[in-house]
Length: 312
Image (cartoon, rainbow, N blue to C red; front, side, top):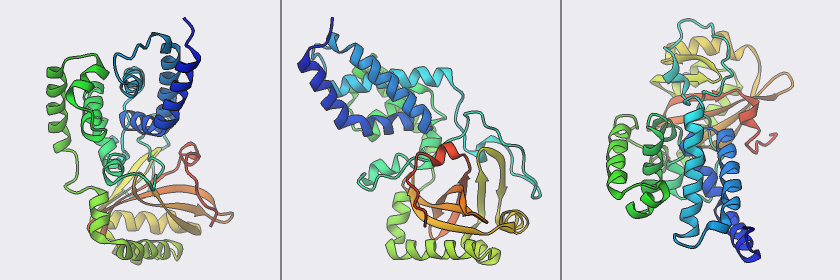
């Protein structure tokens, strides 16, 4: 049965209204921008094909999330788990790096939405999305639907085609797993406590130190146990000394210019590498108080393509 004109118009209006939120939902579930786009495309195609059978027994929004959830669950079953580099292998010794692993196993950052709420920005931070990847697919869906998108237990059960009891049980197990994997404070809370002026000073100092190839100044901005990773290279460096050695002998062999931006709700920098100053990395910074606890330099141009990065 072909969808009516009215149903088609309603579907298109609903998709326009919810597309961004559905895409962010897919990203939280899958940890990848490309996977999120694949899942959303499959979901919207399936939703449109099934529109004629939609009889208003549930809210159209809930139905869209149901179709999208099942598209994500299919991808979770078919594709490898996403990791942060610091979870994938032990820290490197010395300054040599391993070969790139270009398989789709790396957690990716999410483009910044300046209009997003505090809570929604928290839910795309790297640590939160990385923690979600350690949950079975159904638990991921339950936790995001209940605690990020504010679905109640009944509506969540309808989305997943299960019982309220199963939803409550899955939520309890998901919370227990995340409790041991998430930092004590989110990046949104850390940035709010730090304040705009102090965050700007830290960013300016970071840009200046990196641009001058000043290892000592850069290290002063780091926590003692700071980490530096460069996916899709699996190698990463643990602690101020290891990071200082790597930057001295490898990173600062060439000139750099940094451009500040935001990614995954966090401080980030587009790192342009000389002599042509093409984009070399998207470096997402994780803070602990006033210190940098982690730097993740995403090297993959396919990740860069999802971001609006200024030339200067």
